[in-house]
Image 1 (cartoon, rainbow, N blue to C red):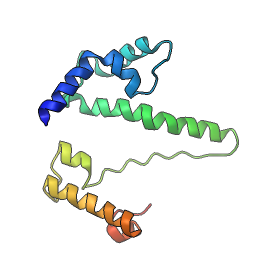
Image 2: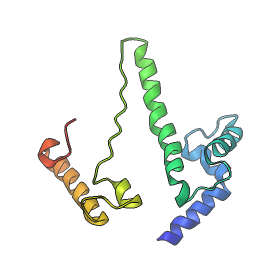
Image 3: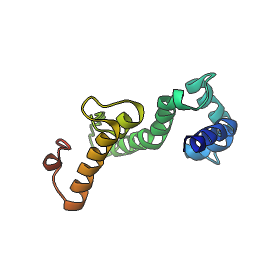
Image 4: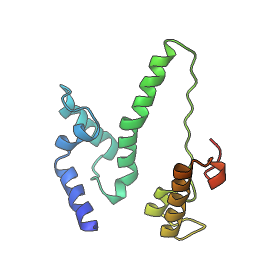
Length: 138
């Protein structure tokens, strides 16, 4: 499995100008080649996409795919109503990120992931409140 990921990372590094606009949803932009190169140079410098730069890669994707859309929605809504924006950044003890990048303090990695996924499955399939399955309040 690691070989597949490594070959995909190699492909991403080799063809960033092709995949960057697709991954970040700006294909067809008249200046996409310059944007793609500037993003890579600014955020990665001389580094390559890989396991060492996984946090930078995640930041690039989440900023474009989630944060920018949220910002646009807030900006549009602010034309009509007073609006307050909050950013919720909670890292659970039992998160996928902890399983991939580090050991949790309470449970072994795979057990922690199973616990987290099990809680979410219970909440989704039995329509339980978050507090009932230990997901916290809103």
